Image 1: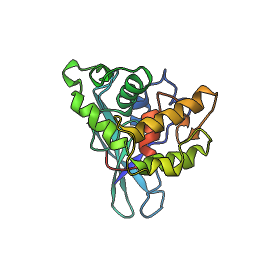
Image 2: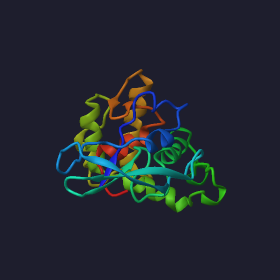
Image 3: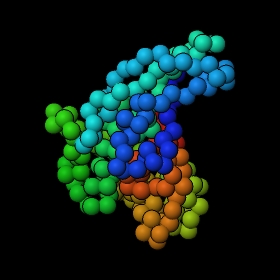
Image 4: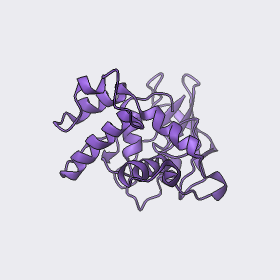
Amino acid sequence: MILFIPLSAAQNNPETDWAVAGAECILRQCPDCLTDSVIGHGRRRKQAHDEDHDWIGIRRGLCTQCCKTITFLPPFSLPYTHYSLIARGQALQGYFRDGCSLELAVPLMKDPNRVPDVSTVRRWFCRLDSAERLNRLQQHLDSPSAPTTRASMDPDPPRTSFPFLRKMISAVVDGLGRGGVFAYDLGGLSWRTLAHFLYVLLPLRC
């Protein structure tokens, strides 16, 4: 069983190491039997590559009532993935905000041997590029700048790269540019938290 550690506003500060903050936390309530019976059950390491991390430490827990084992992850590291959501957000920023090519939008890594392939970045974008996520974003923002449901469900969208994701980024950037503050799990939405925001809008396989 996997649970994400909720980070406080202080831990979400760019000056704070989110991986270190998350590695010291476990939740005591078991999500299965709902008793406060979770105890520490060791530590392990997980890949979460970005500019500041390669491998991060994570905690495991054991419920003494129902015997379920739990893995606790910080919210910027999705299960079964090798790159953090900070790295994925940097790729989004480079491609959609800065107008870089996919090749130039590839994020820098602490470990130079783990720089993602262009095909990996394209796969990140493709998995976010869905009409379902676009509609979910529209509902979340509830803003005139958000695309309409008809546009998002157009069976023949404009022939551009990642058309639904492009509309999603445009809606968010427009709102942020007007001084909008979008509250969600990690507090205020920013380029730093954008990838996390888009993935948790509709948790499809990453």
